[in-house]
Length: 356
Image 1 (cartoon, one colour):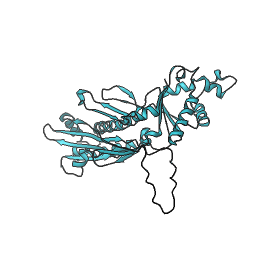
Image 2 (image 1 turned 90 degrees about the vertical axis):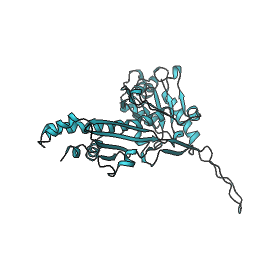
Image 3 (image 1 turned 90 degrees about the horizontal axis):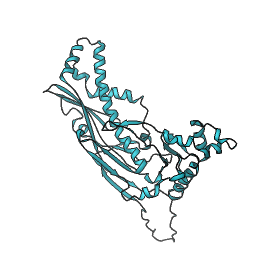
Image 4 (image 1 turned 60 degrees about the vertical axis):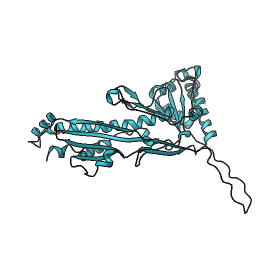
């Protein structure tokens, strides 16, 4: 066995798949299931959902009236590309070769484990990008990703609502005493019922779920109107628990709240929330779109052994892991890449409220 057998895309992919089996999925992975596609172009049809239109009356023995596709919009765009690598240098290789003299050396296992962990970190970073895209769409219908100049300076901006039609109809901002951070005057139950009525009347959609962060959920736990509704005699003294409030909303308005606090570090190294504080996105109980993974150059051109010094494996539908040997200097490059973008066919079915 050589070092190239150890630092190869296939065992690294197997290592990742073992980690993946224990990973808690991102929320967006269920709302936008992964799909594989060829090429860089993404096309989908939006706006075809909504209230049913009555069938046109017709006389016998006449040709049917042709119905137009009201409000249907074809969306086309190009998928963005992401790639980053890590290098196993000559000093590291020499250390590994020394440890390989004793295959049972715990030092060897430790060094190889760190190399595999580095590759797994790259794959984890690849999973961050589609999730931040999906959450951006749920908040304002936009995707904005920018790398610092030191890291390539590439910027991706996608607006799924260029005419503001969706934002004007399906988003709103609470003001003054209606804001949820005003516990004495806010009326969240009324706000939720208004959203449910709006979606039902305009699109025939039944809202059953809502996404918030812990901070936003805290506004609801402190709301006086809710406490009094749950305990009319001494509502001001009731201490709500998460489970009590969840059951209250399920019974009162038929909505299950998902508290989503997962975080990531952006390209500048700053901690960010996938879903922001002070917003609520209301949605139905089905998928809203798909997360399309394109075919990376590594997968298209190097998979299958086209190059003797390169090995490529694909994980999580479309994330490519590449290991490549270099002769001068003598290095091994581990690269992870993806081409990914979500579609949003059910964009009209959600409603986003800025509550504070």
